[in-house]
Image (cartoon, rainbow, N blue to C red; front, top):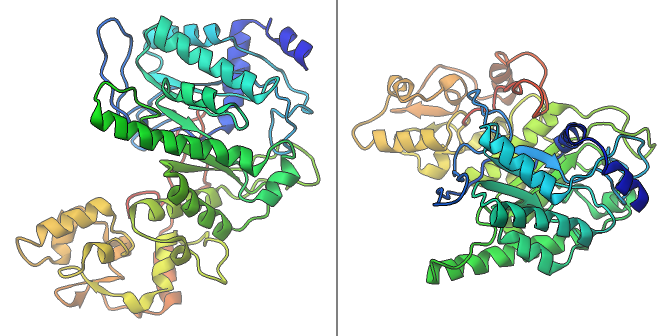
Length: 433
């Protein structure tokens, strides 16, 4: 393997870029930077809390990171991974200086605003993490690059290396990959649950400690100021949506993650331990909607999916599905409901709830007022009253309401998020509420 790595290192740089940017598309665990850092005298670039993303925004804006792997040469043989050592694919390895120069040259040409750097495990975890750290040292120290950088912490690497890299990166990710230890043992026998959770815990402790130090001494260095995230592959293993959502909630609570990303499994192997067809991408979409309810709407995992419902509905978004299973709570009076109750009404999002609370201080609201406030009533109207009246007379029968909620459903197939194709189709339910 080592001799092989040395030979692929001689590949032309543009060919490396082609191979390693394509290989990076399987890692979706990057998003808005969440950090502000202004340009300083003698440095290049800046980081913004809004606008630095790896893909197309919902409104069509292209916001960009240079998203590449350090290498796709790997000593591991994870069954679900295109870069596994047993897979016969073109291989390449970047040196730290090559990545640093690519980042600076792309930035100067206004192609990118930052860097997302991940990697397969070449030689061993420590060697890989050393290469990532050396890349960041060059960018921050030699090239004075002050832009956004998101890197992967390599499970199994020395804690000192991960911590040193954390003072140079804005965000770090540790991919949990599979939703259960059983599936990890079966499909990724070279990895362990402990090796993945240990750096997550290290990052959490480092972030908390750094924030306390910065609060006391403004000149103290920041450790991973934009927080940490992770990714789970959906559909490569048999776990239910309930298992995935329960794990997601636990990760947020235990490790204070900024985001949990979900990636629908793409068949890259004919291994009998893996499914031969793609899971529906709508399942990935529903999990993101459930994640939104966990993070911003005050839902718990137990509320979103109660036994015997082990999987999310593909016909209805999770909020509508919850509402139909809890019709005893509806309709709610829009003029008296508190924030928590408003957030549980299908079609009313966090910003919509704020507008309602603000407007009703002036006077009692009607359905016409709600339209002027920008509230989309096509879902909310079945679950609310204004001044004691419903929008229309309709039976509160779950089957009838489900029919009403799905009759104008957006047609067409869901598409997986990609860096390399046109913006993904936004399905109904992806919008607020």
